[in-house]
Length: 89
Image 1 (tube, one colour):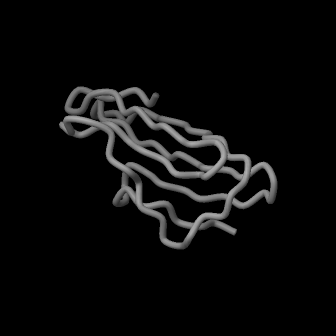
Image 2 (spheres, rainbow, N blue to C red):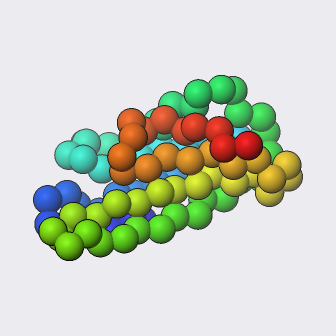
């Protein structure tokens, strides 16, 4: 879970640790929304790593990394981009 700010609630992310498929709950949605992938994701051993920081105006920015422990491959999404995983390596 990522902490929200004064204009947006908390953000929940979920990942299937075997397939890498992932979902987000935020932004006034009524349920989990699947996060799109820019390329097909192979089976692996996935986990999420995230960080959030507060801005002086009370808003927050965040990044979430999806990491495949089997290959070391990394994808990223952020508060500044559409919810689509982008391959980093």
